[in-house]
Image (cartoon, rainbow over all chains, first blue to last red; front, side, top):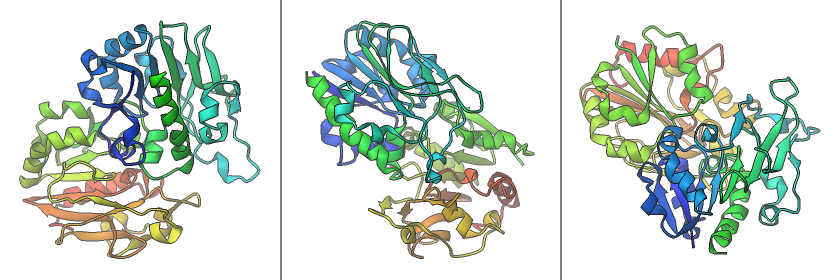
Amino acid sequence: MSLAILDGGTFYHHAAIHGPRYRALFDKIIYAPELAADALAGVTFLIVPDRINPNILRAKREVLIDFVKAGHTLVVLGENRADTWLPGVIWAARPTNFWWWLDKDARPPNRLLAPDHEFFRAVPFENTIWHFHGVLTPPAGARALIDVPADPEGRDSGGALLYEDRVTLPGRLLVATLDPFYHHGSHFMPAATKLLDGFLPWARQQAAA
Amino acid sequence: MKPGLALSFGYDDGSLRTFADARLQPDVVLRDIYSLPEIDLNDFSVLFISMHSDQRFLAARASQIENYLIRGGVVVANGHHAYPYLPRMAGFHTIDGYKLSDITVLRLVEHPIWHGIDPHDLTFRRGVSGFYGRVWHDAPPDALVIHALGHPGLPVDFIYPVGDGRVLFHGGNDLWTFGGEDRPLVPRIMQWVASGRNVQ
């Protein structure tokens, strides 16, 4: 009945995970290269933060998939190439537009599809909005929570930035393209900090439920 | 000159593509960071370490990195030094609630890598500040400090010796993403490595 998180060993994982703001929320911190099944004993909710080396995640895929097969929740954030190791994940790269917000009349393309979902009681939708790294196509039966329309330059037909999948495996997958650990841990984007301020206490609550 | 080596981290990131796009002679080879134990660093003229690197892993390889430096190797390291993987480095200092004046890039000395690049263009990218650096590091006492943030005493770019080698440390987003298309920094860094001049 505990919350665990993988630690990729970068400076921003160190700041975000081991820093005082969130440290007490995690029951277990597992250095990603050392992930093994027995490290997950008692864990019910596991976070794979953004930007863990995907070579490690591919090497550990069976441990991660078995964890979800046991009925638990796995959250996988952005830039982890989950499409190369997690069942059901289809991801298309889209060149990142870091600058959408510079035009004061600009509206972000992000759309809230599931305002009733409990996630948004913990994390206000506006705290999920920043640039994004590619789009996801949720598998049949999964629920997109946030999406964006087709790329204006025609490079993709749009897709989810966050989805919940309870059908591919016996447990629950939450898959996102967002990279809040990098931005919070780099001291570089207040929205990322606000997202984690809501998401991590919610994850802890979910782990204990 | 021997080729350079850049440690990759498993996903495609625009900053790593910079090395291939630069069409360098000699080139910069990309290898996954976790293959470091199987690599003889002495085959390379310079080791590039991205801000996205697993520093906990690098700290476990600190003696390999230090021995490479002592023998005359060059390390170009980026990000915040959170684990002790580089010799002679201390920690970093966050600037809580920073304002523009706290993260404005100040040039303390001229250096060929940044020659002709206005510090203003390092402070701002499309009018947005913060990409270049948001924390400051303690530089070793004999370091050549090139840029500071907000105050001359708060280093963000510096070069210091280790044995016959030297470290170019940049405490922010990967250095090779700056300079723009007309003044890319990677070829300049390679020229600086090739010139082999002591410390500077």
